[in-house]
Image (tube, rainbow, N blue to C red; front, side, top):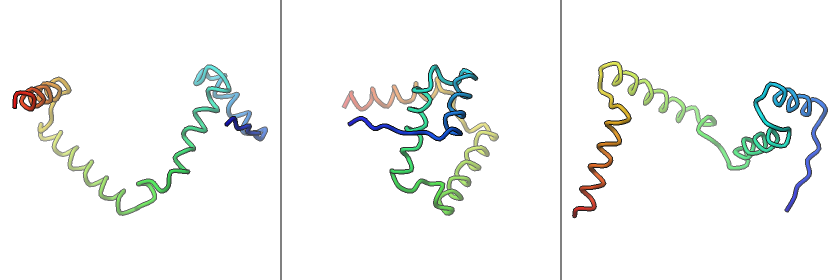
Amino acid sequence: MPITLTLSPDQEALIAAAVARGEFASAEEAAKVVVFRGMSALEGPSIEDDPEQVELLKEALAEADAEIARGESFTLEETLARMDQRRAARHAR
């Protein structure tokens, strides 16, 4: 079902400026991205709405940063190789 939206002059100016900066190929593309991003508001609360969840995420990220600083990390190639090994082991059963 097609939906027609009417933008305010300020909204039109923001979209036009983004197109002029080369961020989007057209006003239609910019509008689609804006609507897509705004759809998350219809999906209900996000982690940003829950201070406790935000704090838990910050703690997890701090721990991950500490692990990286201690050299307890893997390259993408190492991770992909481990995933391939696990996949092969599952299929071998």
